[in-house]
Length: 356
Image (cartoon, rainbow, N blue to C red; front, side, top):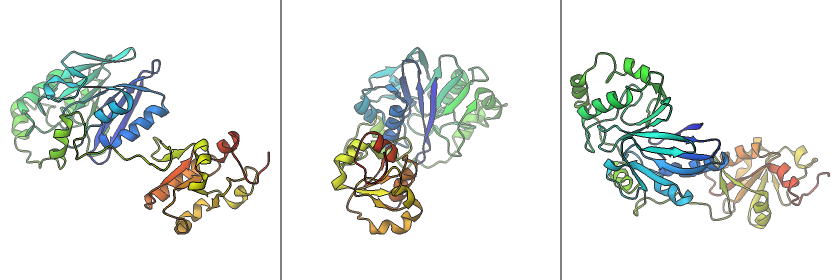
């Protein structure tokens, strides 16, 4: 199975990708609206087909990317029927199976943090995705969205801590950089559920947390009750309009050689190789400006901020770093030439200098 754990640093949300290597069918659990571009890039680079997105609950700290992914890929949206959300393709009940190729996840109702909390257990019970019901050495709060400490205590013990001891547990959030735990660990070390803790201890603890409400709650909950469909306040991330570009999982825009040749007159081509390479065997793109990577920070001011910049090097590695540097410095229109001069020449595009 293909598995990836992805992270949104703003909301500390984990998004999980599971895929079958044979059929290339994939699921995403708890996608984040602002990270849809990243998730689509990963799906494309791994040659996967997204068949469904799953929500562990109606989140209060971020807007889900489910609707936007549905629009971009045709994926189906699944979440608990008890969540009361509109716009889902599949309202899940306990025991339902969500398939990806020959593999599947079992839906288990784990209410208590919210009424509609649902955890997902892999078919062989070696992995489970617990949402906010069970966090690493903690759990989700129970003081809003129909939360109930009594219900959460029973949900965790009956549906999650009853799994095999070596079953790995993956939460929807972690605020300390922790990534995974196990049933055996949480049975022993979770201060709210483990050891000799009982329901009375748990209820008293949860009733006196005194936490402020999430900052994005007023926006996130209504949007997530529409499965992330915007309603005026939230817009999809803007796409560049100056050329057809591809967003990569590495976190930058790339342009193909064919597209660059079509746009040569409208962009600034910045070659970040060393002078000997610029004049060497591979030659350079007509009209390119030589700015070695080590000099880019000092020389970037000479470029025109009003025109798009395409960075170029031998293979695309150094120029990717250059594109990141310019983007971090506030340049609004920057892309990297995918494959660099090697791919440019291999595909027969025009070159100044160089040798056959």
